Length: 93
Image 1 (cartoon, rainbow, N blue to C red):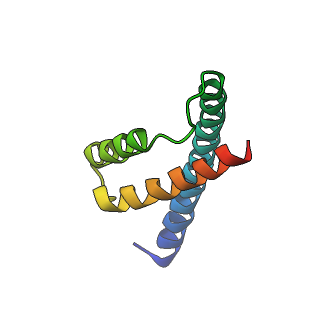
Image 2: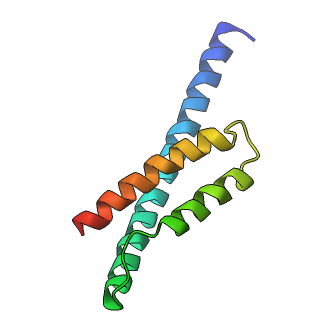
């Protein structure tokens, strides 16, 4: 590959990454909306917003779903942070 071709490929991959980032942000916002809706439903019947068993279930499922370069523990770390942020969002709403 020539230098020009390499630079074009870098630019193309960066555009793809930007597109993926946009999709991730959209999906995270959709997830956040569902978390807020779920909290409001739970409040109606007196259930606590935080369910540690459900969180454990989510984290266990993450390890089973991965098939790419992000193996279970890495994805689990990412999801632990996502869940932490979602809990904070629940507290704010």
